[in-house]
Length: 474
Image (cartoon, rainbow, N blue to C red; front, side, top):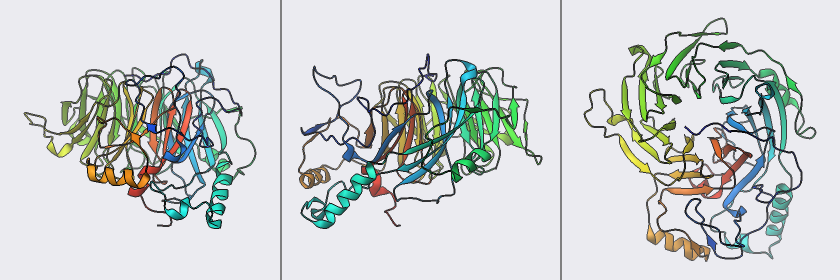
């Protein structure tokens, strides 16, 4: 149930680079043989420091919008369905966790000039040839590109209370829903702000201190407690479900008048707080929920207010779930004990005597899993964040191949002291953020992951997942 950022401190805007900064402008590369460091397992010796290897990323940038954000969402834009070329521009909605309820806001922001360079895991001879004039030109272009920092442009809308969770509607991205710790759910229209950001120049103001007062389209106070669970239907435009800490789930249906009817009779099946909700990507009446009671439930809105199927999923709180949009039978879940699981929903039935749906269970993380999400571009790829300060990326199509590993070491001519007990499916480990809270893949930029933590946001693109994604110009 680890969710809230307690006693938050407002981030200070400084141009001075801080120790441990995760910006891609870092140029330091380890001179000693690389050793993988595991939080909660390894300890730093006296005088020993952790160092980020920028060659592990195609792109890595850090930014913040003031107060820390527990939740955010990527806003779909009209810049292209699949984008591979740097620099990138992205839009987000994020809700703050301010010290006082009246200080909170929803940030609508645009980050442009996200620079980077696609890197080959095994450099070719031409790339290593420093005497080549072409290589010199490429190097100069890369250095010049990476020296330009991303530009953050921000608009703030007042929001009473901390934002527990915020989600943008995929069909109409300017519409978003927010869960407040004051106990109400609101729906907003941020089209004017997005249009203003889209028309603004990339040069100029990087932030905005003024907060705009705007009324939501609808404010629902029918929940008996605050909540964290909320999700828009990918199948029916405007359909929404919201779940609270009082184990109730309400269904929202859009009306022809541009507002919503919220069913006052909740769906009830969990015995404790509803932590997360996910609509099916193939069935318009079906959604899933997870709870502090350790269970996952599958609901069909046509079958009444009780779950169609409910089963014990973890031994502790189930914090988050993710329904695979490319392989609709796969559901991932993350727990308070640091474990996460993959299930095949075809193995579930209302009359099941034994739950045989579990196909994978991982105990890698040492603290609660705070976010989990399948890649929108690769059905076998999953990203996970944890309170152990790690963001991990997994590819479940991978298997250990000693011959392939030996060939790779020979090509790179490098010694990498990786722990032997690392799962072969573990593709990438990102560190450097404190108290990670939520992550999202960008639906239009293959390989881009965005994460929020108590110390701000990171935008990252690991270099070792490009082989599974469309190549540049594809």
